[in-house]
Image 1 (cartoon, rainbow, N blue to C red):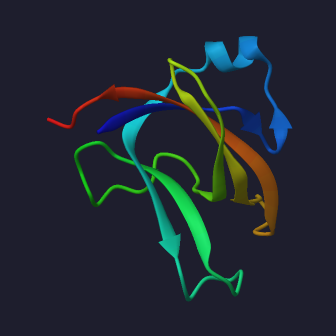
Image 2: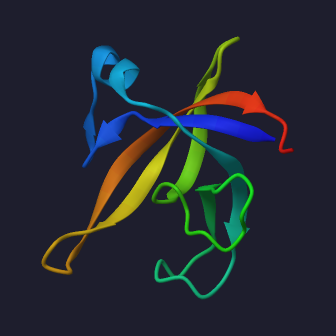
Amino acid sequence: MLFSVVQTRLSGVRLTREEIAAVAPLVGRLSIHDWLTGNTAGRALRVATLRHPTTSYHTDLLLPIFDPVMVRMTGEGFLLVGWQIETLPDNRTAEHSQGWWVRMAGPIN
């Protein structure tokens, strides 16, 4: 199943409805899975990823969201929120809250 995804935050700051509506959505395969061991958090994490719709060797289309929770669902879509790790230009990392507005886009051909 393909999903259309728009991020609702930029570096942890919530975007306005107008800013979200102006962004072109990314279409890909949404996956939510458990990462049980070997991560830097030192605990089991749930991870949401958006992958290229047809090619498995491409990188994720968006940075993954960790510990995603569905906080809102309507007839049009649903909102996933969690946190993401961003690599800064000086190679430090920063954790930000992030949200994805997700809509169904269709089956994978």
